[in-house]
Length: 107
Image (cartoon, rainbow, N blue to C red; front, side, top):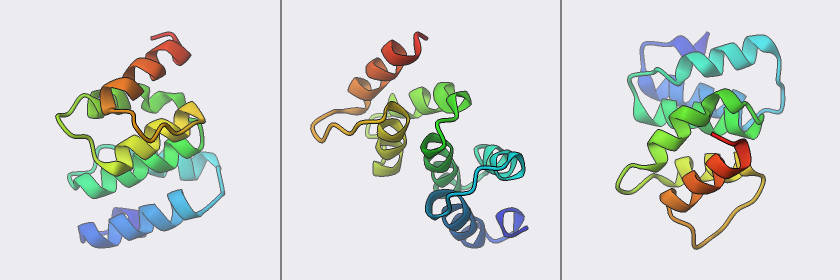
């Protein structure tokens, strides 16, 4: 319910708490996280992206790759990429992660 609050900060913290800190992976939780990918607030969208990547939800791949091609992707976007790939590369750019994701997931 808090993930649908009118206050973006409440949605952000609820998404972070349930999605990033939490370990549950039920259809209801995944659906709530997927809905947050379309949130008007960037922080909420990115927290949902990290949470779904942590759960290895391949459906985030197009959104993630698009975000990686921004001029300077945020640390959360890079974290989401590393979680989905299952490895972190400290010196990689968003482009490097996008290439690795396309190779790993054959897109």
